[in-house]
Image: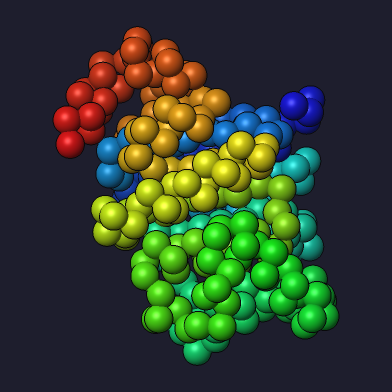
Length: 247
């Protein structure tokens, strides 16, 4: 892993009105590292990763991505967003565009890639997520799991250095979760820098280099998967694991 962190958060805070979503969060993610963030609802997990590509503006502290500090500098923000892909709970696909058109759009608009090259890139990543045969269908012709894999392929078409996942399986039926997680495992095994907010603990155990547990807007515990699951140090971590592993 490189000496320069891929992502560095120092004292990051964020509030929405009277609600403190993040409170003094410190987190460093190395290049090529896979970090899983978990915790109860309202703990600040999604806000954390939304701040990393400035979908939410943090109120205090510093966020540095690939050596670029997030600020009101539009050029710097554009630079960061070109290197950071994000996959949300909802698929956010354009319903009037085919799967391939959804994938090719951002490279054409953002990077100025010619249509033929952008579509070739789209097919490359649809093949990676194992649905090249769906390229000319529209999103509503696909299952939820297939749509989420399209969303992953679309993010990959920008060839980002970092991928952020915000509970990517939470909107899926149980039988569709595995196919999306398998796609994410493949990315992880190829060395992609990843931060994934998820309740899928089997995925966390298999893929994560470190697991971050959050509660009440704070990082409560950070540990490798073996330590996290077998010897958590904080009472809130133990309570969370007791509850979620019983489900």
